[in-house]
Image (cartoon, rainbow, N blue to C red; front, side, top):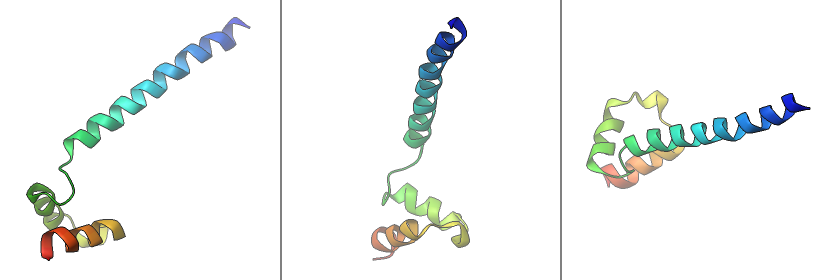
Length: 63
């Protein structure tokens, strides 16, 4: 039984680490529609764009 309890102590720590990692990565990317974001998208190969990125690029950077 103690092995199961120790596993439950590790899971919240791993989840917290995952959430913090994602939030740090998200904080590093420029805001959609900003000048920096438009420049980053111009450098990114168009084949790697998602449909949402293409729509946002058209909305914020072209029009």
